[in-house]
Amino acid sequence: MSDASLERLVTRIKACNACAADLPLGPRPVLHVSPRARLLIASQAPGTKVHETGISFNDASGDRLRNWLGMDREAFYDTQKVALVPMGFCYPGRLPKGGDCPPRPECAPLWREQVLAELPDVRLTLLVGSYAQNHVLGPGRVSDRVAHFRDYLPRYFPLPHPSWRTGAWEKRNPWFTEEVLPALREEVARAFA
Image (cartoon, rainbow, N blue to C red; front, side, top):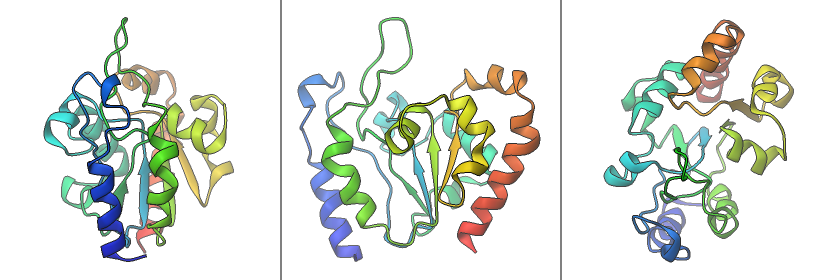
């Protein structure tokens, strides 16, 4: 596990075209990693803004997530601290009734374990949204997992996806702001300590 081996792997990922025929904007794998990262953020897949910029969570969802974490952009994108590894590395397209398609099913089996093997210092993994949670924990409800986040510590911390839709969910579930977010910030600080 070294910078060089991870760099070679990332180069292979960036050249991947396994599902190119199914991607409406073509392949543009997006991930941010370093073998020294202490916090892993496992999320869904890039949206259109992330596809355009090549920067994970470079959108309103990222603003919300950084607010939840109490983290500024500089710290969030410091790969020496934070690895950003979605379940699908490329923008998967839109659903007919709105929202993004699920991550392409080819991506995680092709790359996920190889990437995780190059991140030996990860102390905490944030499972952001149902796709990351279901991949790692098996089927279940996001709200239940978030409410019972302590059951998954110290290795995992489940979170809802920070999309605009989550604002209404947060209002209906004040325990998220009152209990979960302070604990999240504490666990993230512990991972960096």
